[in-house]
Every structure is written in structure tokens, then in C-alpha cells.
Image (cartoon, helix red, strand yellow):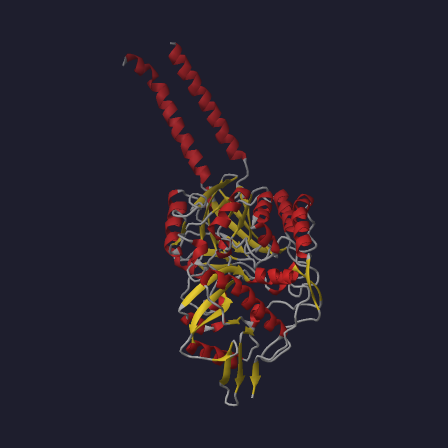
Amino acid sequence: MKRREFIEKTAAGTALLSLGLSLSSFETNDIKHLTVLHTNDVHSHIDPFPADDPRNPNKGGVSRRAALIETIRKENPNVLLLDAGDIFQGTPYFNYYGGELEFKLMSMMKYDASTIGNHDFDNGLDGLYAQMPHASFDFICSNYDFKNTIMNGLVKPYKIFNKNGIKVGVFGLGIELDGLVDKKMYKETVYNNPVEIAQDMTQLLKKEEKCDLVICLSHLGYKYKDDATRICDLKLAELTQDIDLIIGGHTHTFLDKPTIVKNKAGEDVLVNQVGCYGINLGRIDFYFNRNKSHTNQGKSIIV
Amino acid sequence: MVKLKKYNGFLKLFVIFLTLFFVFSCSQKNYNLTKIEGKQLPVTEKDNQTREIENFIKPYRDHINEDLDNILAYCPETLDKSTGKWQTSIGNLMADICLQKGNHIFKAREKKEIDLCLLNHGGIRAILPKGNVTTRTAFEIMPFENNLVVLALKGDQILEMTSYIIKEKKPHPLSGMTFTISKDNTAKNIQIQGKPLDTSRTYYIATNDYLANGGDSMNFFLKSIQKYDLNYKLRNVLIDYFKEVDTIPVPKDIRITEE
């Protein structure tokens, strides 16, 4: 009898609790809002450009970027903050501290993840490894295999972020190192074909893990005018499917607005890059609806 | 079995409830993307600074500034890479310094001597201004992380090198070699370390790793027989030299002449 009573009570309790939870979740807003903020090729530009700089006077600066990010977080706490690589190299901050300050400041700004750029190898794998304790964010790169290097286990092939109930799958793609980075710097790091890896990643993130959003952090470069066969973000977008956003870097491309590319399945992919040196912060807002009547409704893209 | 029957009704309800619960929970997990808005936010002086971040950066910045502003030498006049058709005083100086400093290492490691040094005009990124020379000056002139390398080249490649210089019409930094551009735009009277070019000989040439890998289309460097990386950054070559001298010499000697 005791056992029966226990089961009944527990079941009834669970039932009530579950009902309550279900009801309460129905009451919440039907629209979820995720803000993706991103930088690329900051190249150790911690201080703003001086007022007399011929190209970028008074632009950039980590302290101002941090304030801008903080303002946006107050407006919508549901933020994913990402970097597309080349954090290192460009000012004496890197020469003197080897990237320590860059990583510490990105941690303070609560970056969620970064991919790895070619210049992040500038102090060799050992130099990158030495700075890893200063980063509280994740390094994500899917097509570099660090298995036989000191970086083994420190770089994730992908990560799924749960942002207020929205499942965001992020994977990363690095540029071919041979000919660009001295072999003595990248050592036994293996570069794998980015298109093939992207296909594996989207299969995993969209089909198996059922992410609501898939983001590719790429350091492949936006486009190569003089080498049409070379893989770049625009080509990657065309050759794959199930990627919603490609955040790019490497080519220091300043775009007026994100580029919309049709993917293999004829769907729209957003490709963005915000120049370099922390002069700009990219902002992409995603609105999700879980009302079933919207299932077959297309998405609107305002850029 | 008898006992189980008693629970059947309840179990059924429970299973139905669980099923419904999971259906609801699953449907909640799938969101439809309905709208995307993208824009670029410029980071400008209109944005406030973050006190916490500013305070954090300050000691790093102060340390770097103190070090960069450390006076290493004195420069008696401004050396500018834009004054000179076939050579400039700053180019001459940089090539002389690389040859001299590189030789210390090359001699010690390989028991050989560097014959000449060729760098690229584009690699000089700032002027060497009159007055105090600091570490910052070295960073401005040479912001890149390029290493000094020594390449073993056959005499034939020296001829390719002179043709390249004549064709490019740029005052590429050169040390250890002199030649004359004849009226038909070919090199003659090529002297290396004061001796006429011997095409059958192997010469050791100091340059930076960027050029050694064929940068700026200096393809003759790709034909090198051997490459020695001195693991010595060009900027550090400059800094070490500035520390050694009190007053910077201004080498105005003519290395490439036109007939």
C-alpha cells in the first residue's frame, strides 16, 4: 500500500508540475530575439587610431567597443559575440605581450567564441598555446586538425550555444596554411577541405542536432578577384546548405551591408565581414517564432 | 499480476500524459526563423569608454610607451626613402645594418661571410627622422615580423638580380654590391665586395624571408641553392644596431650609377 501511495503521489505531483511548466511556457512571448555581434581581423588594435591617422582617424578601440557591446546587451541580453580570427599581430601590444592582453580583453567583453586566423600562428603554435589560459571564450575551428600538435584538445570543431532556448550551432573554417604561414609556425596542423568539412558540420548541426541557427566563423576570405578558383566565403555559401550566416575575415573586406547569397538548396545565406582593426562591429538580429502557423512562412531579410 | 491490474488505469493516464508532455516540449524546441536584420556599427569617438577596460589596458600601454620611447641613438638628419632614384640613404643604411649584423650570426654559425644584402624599397614603412631615435622608430620603419635570412645564389642569379633592379626602377636597399646601368639598360661593372662578379661562384645574400619566398616577384631568390634562417627579426636588427651606435651614419655613397 505504501508503495502504491508513493507512486500515485509522485505521479500526480509530476503531472501537476509538468502541466504547470507547459502552461507557463505557453504564456511566454512567441518571438525570440537573438543578437549576433561580430568582429574580425582586429590585429591587436587595442587603442583607437590617433586623431591624425590618415586612414582611420579616431576609429576603433577596445574600450569603446566594450561600451557599445554593453549598450546592446542592455537592450537585448540574448547576445552571441563572435570573432572570425586574426586577433594577433599589428601593434606593439602583440610584440610585447604575445596576445595576452587581446585575449584578456575579449574575455572581459564576454566573447563567446573565435575561430583561428593565419596571423594567430605568428608566434607559432607554442605562442598561441601560451596565451590560451587568458581566454575564457572558446576557439572553434573545424578544418584544422591539431591532433599532433600542442594545441590538441584546445580547439573545438563546433559548439552548440543555447541562447534563451534558441539552439545555435557554430563551426569554424580556417584558411589554407601552406604558402601563407611558415611551416615552422603551424608545424603538424593539418588543413582539411573547408567545403567537405562544412558539409559534415551542417549535417551534424542542422540535421542531427536540429539547431535553430547555424553560423560559420570563417577565415577563408570574402572573395578573390584574381583567383576565381580559390575557396572563399561567397563560394562556400553557394556550395553548401543549412548555413544561415557566414561571418568572415582575412581579406579585411569592408561591406556596406551583409551579402545575401543563394545556397545549393536555393535558400538565402548571409555573408558578412566588418573590415578590420575593430573599426566596426557587425550586428545581425535574428527573430524566431514558434507559432506553428508560421512554419511554412518564409523569412524576411532586412539589410 | 493481480496487483498490476489495479494500476493499469493510472498507468495508462500516466503514459498518455508523458506522451503529451514530450510532444509539447519537443514542439517548443523548434523555432522558425522569421526575420533577420543586419547592420554595421562603426566604433567611433562618439562611443563612451569603459572605465574598467581603460584601467585594465593602462599599465600595459604605459609599459610599452615607456619602452618604445626609450632613446637609443641620435640621427643627424632625416632619412627618407622617397629621395633618390637608384638608392636612398635610409635604404643604404638598412642594407648596411642587415649585412653587418647578419654577418655576426652567419660567421658564427656557418663560418661563412655574407657577400651582399638586398631588401625591398616597399619594406621601409616610415622615415628615420632627425633627432632622437627610439625603439618606436624601429617599430615604425619595420612593423612586420620578417626574419633575416641568407641565401646561397649562383653568379647567374646575381645577373637576374641586377636586371630586376633595372626593370623595377626602384631604389631597393642594397649593400655589398655596386654596378653601372649602361645606356642599353643592362648592368655592367658589377662589383661584389669590391671584386668583379664571378658567375661561376656561389654568393651569400642577406634578405628578408618575405623576399626569399619570392615576394615582390624577386624570383631569382627562389633559385637559391641553400637557405639559412638567422631567426633574427629585421626590427630587432635595427633596435640592436641603434643601441650600439650614438649617432646614426648617413650613407650617401652611390651604389648604382647610370651611364
